[in-house]
Length: 130
Image (cartoon, rainbow, N blue to C red; front, side, top):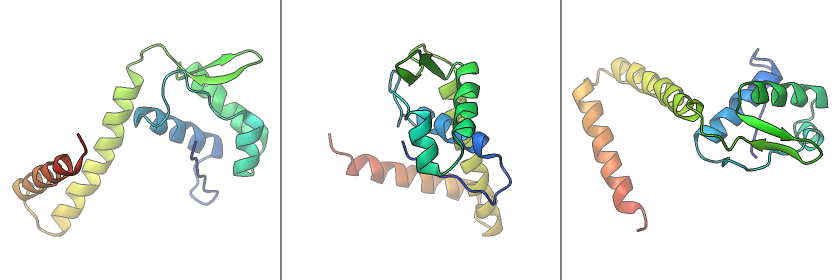
């Protein structure tokens, strides 16, 4: 699990962990039933207090994103939840906003942006192995 924190961006560390775990799940990089790193291991990796990681895991558990198995660890929830779709939409919305803002600054019309996206999508589909 690749999580990176920043102590200089003003967002509490536990929230950064929650946000990144949600992203990893929404992006399909963490699968249902997959075990998260143990609290102490992740805390050591991030050089943060284990209580910080425990707080993040507890928030994820309360949201139904992960489940704890006593004596076994913390796992991505296997019950289907609308959260991953909402998270994907949220992530893509932020990226779309950034793209549209940049396009406006460059004075590129929406129709050109859409054409560019379609062209890029076609190229990616061609490059994907079957």
